[in-house]
Amino acid sequence: MTVIDITSEAHFNELTTALPSSAPIALSFHTSWAAPCAQMNSVFTYLSTQFSQISFLSIDAEALPEISETFYVSAVPFFVFIKEGKVVKELSGADPKELSAAVQQLSGVSAPISSDNKSPPDASAEETEDLNARLKKLVNAAPVMLFMKGTPAAPQCGFSRQLVGLLREHHVRFGFFDILKDNEVRQGLKEFSDWPTFPQLYVNGELQGGLDIIKETLEDDPEFFTNIQSTN
Image (cartoon, rainbow, N blue to C red; front, side, top):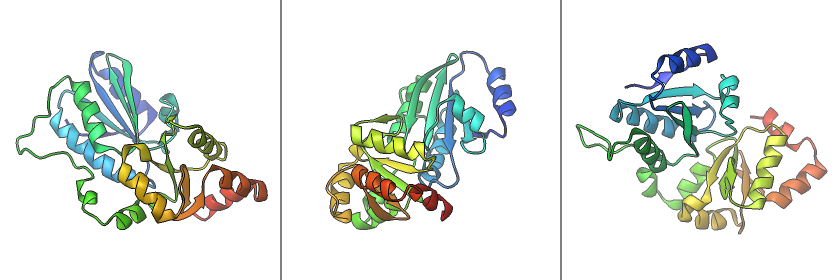
């Protein structure tokens, strides 16, 4: 099974209606501007070659907002897993291992079948990079990048929840990184940015601050986020 690129809401409805009611479906929501999506698209494509019993559908979250709204997509990359006509799992963020595990669980197969014994692409190449180089790459992964505890769909602290709320309130497109999933990034970013707490918000690779600083900035300049988006 290969990944099917959904071209319209009608195309999506036609495909999903034609599938057996018990058929497992994996949906990948992405955008062209969010760099983490590129890596996860590669992982998603690889997994489609390993689990032929699953239908893998790729959806541009911005080009097809009707579908995105149906599944409450608020940040990308975002994955939805459907079985017997019901959503059984949602996954937000760029964690290849977590995506692989979710697809494996959806399939009901104990392990992926691969004739060449390849592993799905993951972040192992990044692990060999110098930490500062990796952090620089991460803070520039999207024009607006949020390092937070948890995900936009499920923040793990009140400060992260409030900052996500501010970004959504001002209709800001942003990428994010869950620092609870990578202690190396969590600790390294404190020194890299000389900022000891999270969340941390970056614009074009430059630290803007945490929740309090962003609130103060908005009080001084209510058009702060509007000006950011006009330059990106």
